[in-house]
Image 1 (spheres, rainbow, N blue to C red):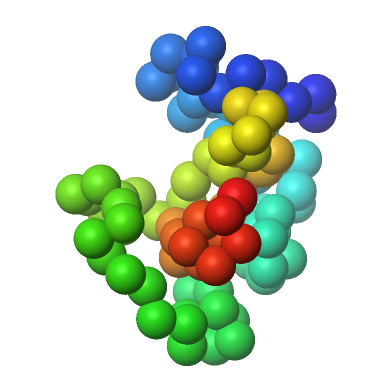
Image 2 (image 1 turned 90 degrees about the vertical axis):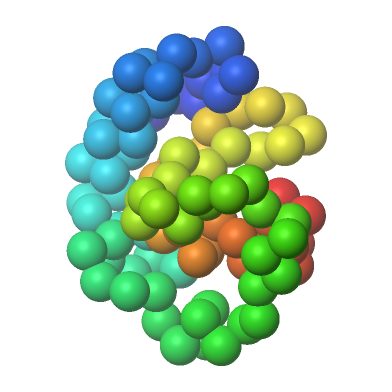
Length: 92
């Protein structure tokens, strides 16, 4: 899958792209490599998340479309918690 500019996509395009990434990733999280239908592994969930860093409702959707905040390009489908860890701890 070729990365696309996240901000140029409509919500429906983001949804379709997220589904395509899930298929391409064989149902696994881009970040932790574990199945997206399962919770992230404990080495991820044991990290404390500062909820004030994220918009209200950030965790309402269990699977997110990850994009690089420097390039704006999409990277893959991730667990919401993995997305939070990537942002808070790795500034991605």
